[in-house]
View: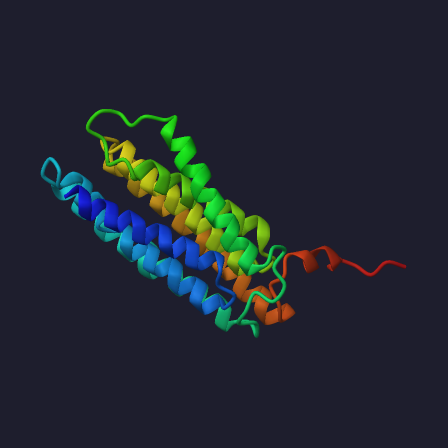
Length: 219
């Protein structure tokens, strides 16, 4: 069972690496969608070590519906509302972003080596995979200019927190996990609507150019 968990964690990590090197918004959205789908079996695989029940099954279904289908649909709709299909001028280039991703992976392994897992919780890859996705999501938020890409970075960071929660705190109540998922869904839903209207009205979603907006003309 551990080999399946580790394989799933490796694939989740690879999707974040691909996202760091992707310039097309469509590719970035598909990577986040794939990551959401790959996250869904994690509760079942981790619970399978002691026999999974309805809690793990409900969490897996909610994860694939919200993270694998709902969020990507909202982001794809926001992209269709504007004219831009690429992240044209990132603050940090794509090759440098990939190099930074490798360095973040090393940092994640170094940090996780100093944070031992509780006995019987997860596998040795759970902690570094969670930390890497959190760091990668923060890097995407800081290094990109398009609001859509920054929201995708936020989702990757939240996915890292999800891996941490499912892998480490597997005994927390189901309602807490579903409540967090619904909170994130509400936040992304609002951001998706805002980005959709930004794309339609301004023909771009560059957050740096938002500083040029004024409520009134200066005399």
